[in-house]
Image 1 (cartoon, helix red, strand yellow):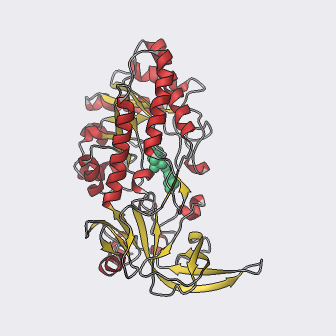
Image 2 (cartoon, protein in one colour):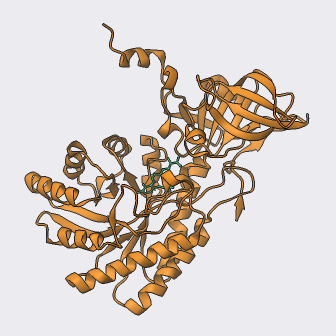
Length: 445
Ligand code: LLP
C-alpha cells in the first residue's frame, strides 16, 4: 500500500501556506523560531489508536488480547507519555532517561517495559523500585544480575526473555535486530533462548512472563512478522515440553514501516494485524493449548508521520554535475544535528516550500544543513522550484520518529524545540536548547 508522508491535518491555505493542526507554519515559525519539530497531535494519537484497535480486533476474533507498547525511543516527552496512557497504550523504554520521562507523564510503572542489551544497575534498580511491568532480559549475565538485585531489594522481577529468532528484516543493516550476528537477545537456533527461559523459570526472584522479539525496523514485509510469530510460538511450545508451563505473554516487537516520500510503501496496521493474528492461529491450531496475551511495540509508525521539521532557507546555490546537468543546493538552518538519519542510514525524505506555493519549474535539488561537513545532507534528492530563496520556510515531512530523539549538539548546535499542534493551538513538548544551556554544560577553568 502506498502512502503520503504528510500528517493527516496538513493542508494548504488559499494563500498557499502550509497549515498543520489548524496552525499555519508561518505563525509557528514566528512564535517558536526555526528549525522546529512540529508534531500533529491528532495524527500521532490516531495512529496509536489504530494500532490498539486493529490489533485488538484481529486477535479478539481468536479470543486473545493484545497490548500496544509505544516504543518511546522514537520520540518521547512527558506529554506524549500522557497521551499514550490516556489512549490506552503502554510504553517501552530503553534507558533510565526514557523511564523517568515516561513516569513524569503519569503512566503507571506497571504499564512500562524496560529494554536494553546492557542495562545498568541504576536503571534496573529504579525499574524494580518503581515496579515496571516487565524487564526484557537480554543475556545470561543479566538474568543473574536481575535475580540478585531483585533479591536484595526484596521484590520479584517480572521478566521476559529477548529472543533472536533468526528472521532477518529491516530497512538498513544497523536497524535489523534478529539475525544471529548482532548484539541483541538470546538465540533460538542455538538453544540459548530455551536455556535462558529455564534459567529464569528456576530463578528465585524472577517471575517469568514470557518471550519477546524485535526483528528490526522499517520493515515492509508482513511475511517477516508472520515468520517471527511462528518461531516464537514454537519456542513457547518447546518450553511447555521442557518445563510443563505455558508462558502467559508473547511480545512481537515493533518495526512497522512508514512512507518517507510521496507514494512510498508503508505497512498498514490493519492488514498487519489480521495477517499476524491469522499466522498465530495457524501455528497455534496444531499446537493446541491456551493462547498467550500478545504485545507489540510500534514506535516509528506512530511518531514518524505525525512529525515534520520546519526550516528556514538560507543560501541557495547551483552546481554543475559531471553528466552536464545541474543541482540546486538549498541550505537550511539545521542539518545533521536535528536529523542524522540521512547520513546514518541513507534515509530518504522529501521537502516542500511551506510558506507559499510556487509554480516555477522544479529542479533537481539537495537540502543541506549548516554543519561543517559535506555529508551534512537532510534530503539527498528532491525536486524544488527554481525560485526557492532565502527566507522561505521549508518543511520536511515524516521526521517525527528518531529525529529529536537522535538529535545532537554537533557544532554546538541548539537542538530545536518540539511543538505539538492541535485544533488551532500549539504547545511546547520539548523546549529549544539555548546558548545558556550550552554554557551551563561547559565547565570553565
Ligand atoms: N521494540 C524494540 C525492542 C526496539 O528496539 C525498537 C526499535 C522498537 C520496538 C521500535 O521499532 P520501530 O517500530 O520504531 O521501528 N534509529 C533507527 C531505528 C532504531 C530502532 C531501534 N529499536 C532509525 O532512525 O531508523
